[in-house]
Image (cartoon, rainbow, N blue to C red):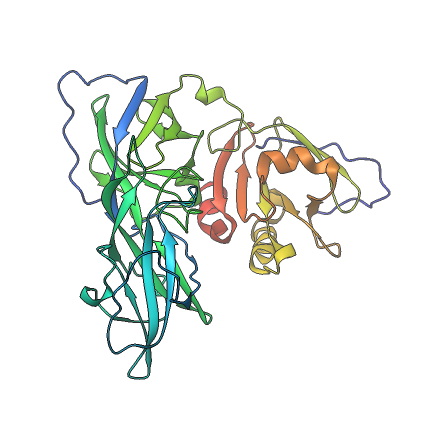
Length: 391
């Protein structure tokens, strides 16, 4: 696709945008038709499974005055330092997970107060190793979860490791729940990826269908993740992921009979209309039918990420004139091939609000010719997401 010269008149472009192994219960008697509202109780499960969790930096300091109660420390560890992980970052006072680190026999080690008894002597001393991103390194911990009138005790899991000389930690759990509706059985999984530093839910939860009628999925792509307010497609219709309690103990799904005609940026929806101006000075109008599929590719080159920018170029090379290709980023330098839209230009606010919604994004969209979004995907997985529709 060749761009017209910047001095050319505005270009009018009409685009259409826009644990799985657990046994599932049989449908209870009388539950053979869709229900308008599903209120489902969840349980915490160790590890991320198909729902990977992120990690954040764990900072250590001198233990003097760190803990607000008497603490018994493990023996034989030198250069002892401590840290506290908040169970709920939204409250100033609450439960914490206590961690100490130091050196034993010349090697870095750490100890987690797993049973929350303020005594590190009855907890394992673990070597401080590099984070294995492909493995579920789980450390069970007792936590007090805020819920109802008072906190209640529960078990969660975390992992701790080194990455690029930083000590990282992260909640290493996800939620699961099962239900039977309309004669079909479902298992859902829920995670809250941005909530690296605490063990409650609701900041940016994501829901995934892990199994349908006993058929478990073996991978989860971006288009499979349903955010709060978005829709999960079940055999009996579209259900909105309506809410999740602060402790993660309950999720609510609401049947929406009008979701098929909804406008949004989720796969299956009608794409929102927008207008945008490219770095070459051309004006694009999106919304409606098109003579070919369109890829909207978010990249994050402004943050030094070259891979997401390269992915856009790879898409262009792979599909050429079979598609329209639009790249969204900030601080776009030079005039690379294809349409490029700078989100820092206020004229592009509509496109930003519809297809980016955050300063740095690596989400791509495949827009079909009939006005619906076919895929929403991680831009680095473009070859998987696009192949089914374009190859």
